[in-house]
Length: 202
Image 1 (cartoon, rainbow, N blue to C red):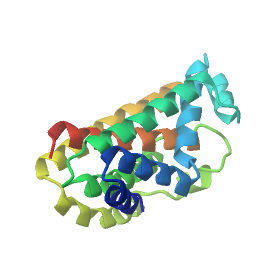
Image 2 (image 1 turned 90 degrees about the vertical axis):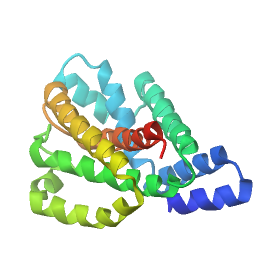
Image 3 (image 1 turned 180 degrees about the vertical axis):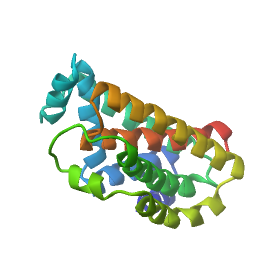
Image 4 (image 1 turned 60 degrees about the vertical axis):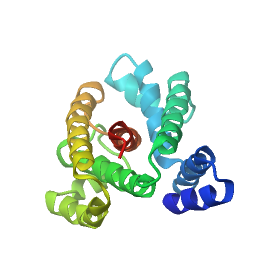
């Protein structure tokens, strides 16, 4: 849907910035800002001094300074990177970033402990296994034929390194993952995919 929104906006306005903003805005609306909310809460947790205070901050429905700043930058980066992408790959990039980033977020549940004793994400975490992740990755394979092999390697290596580092940070800062942390992982991973494709300019 985001890729379609980009194409329609570009044909209507003939402006990559408006098309990029339309694509990002539709993504936020379709998900109810679900991942963005998690990212903002995760950013706010940096105001906590210990694990318990960070987890408490993340459950607070109010948005703090770190959360506002984080949302500004993450949304701004997405608009900027999409607008900077070459026209030949922008549609593939939008689809690839949306799917890969969500798969990565889910994969974190495989070997990262759940930070809380109870929570909405715990039943799902218990159901995640390597076979389920592999099956979930199969629909991504056709997308790879539209992406240069060099870019694909860069994306995969970057996301793998991010996953290792982010999982370690979750263990150290929160004692494991939460639903908000998974939302943050998705948002950051999406920006990383775009960044790789822009950096290699293909």
